Length: 356
Image (cartoon, rainbow, N blue to C red; front, side, top):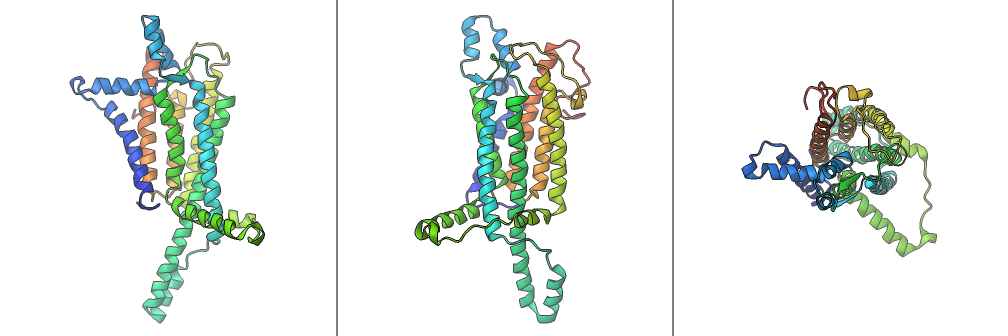
């Protein structure tokens, strides 16, 4: 795995994801209460609480003042919309910047002439072999840039779909709340996730854009060459990417389809927007797990990890956070279902069938 993307960007991203992941891992471990395990688990549970779990905590309180304190540091759950607005803005900005850089600087990808390089090295000596190595490195760099464009396209699809679902599928109760820490974590996530996916290309793309802006300022619009967009030059490099990207895309689509169905099921349970009544969700992956929408999210980000080629360590740290965060939230939701419904199916797992 590479630690590219400039001298500081990827290490900073890795540290940020590690700082977000370790408390969740610690809260999930069987740490003795005397060592602070119960306190840590309680804090994480409170921070991650949203919707029904926040209302349950408030309704179980013995006084109005206690109930008020439970919701003091909370925001409406409909603020989930802010996550996806931020995700769309950040992802679209990165996608346009890196796509422009790739289009202007990275020529159409061609099959790597490995056979030619090998034959030439035998015929004319090591200089040709060195040239072939440089050529191969250049092509690898171009593949990496266009691969980043491909992964950002997947992320763009994801955040746009989630934005649509938040507005048109989910019906949040006016009393549904989430903790302010969870809200800030969501904003952090949808800022850092697309940056992590593009971290290997951001420094060079930013440098290119900076040079273009400086040139525009010096020369003026009249002396700048016209930008002509050839659609085939945008599509062909993406079509020439490797099998890894297309397998990742298939996994991404599979997860997206299931998440769309599961969100539709959850949304249909609350057609009455003012009602706080809950019923047991059924259908699709709900037959096996309590949080199939979280399971589908894991599949979606696994698809993006595979499509990225797995060479950027920041993407691995991102995926580790997704696993730990969603697993912790799924376990809390699963416990809530078991406490809420006496007839809840005991055969269901929290998020991963036969595992958790």
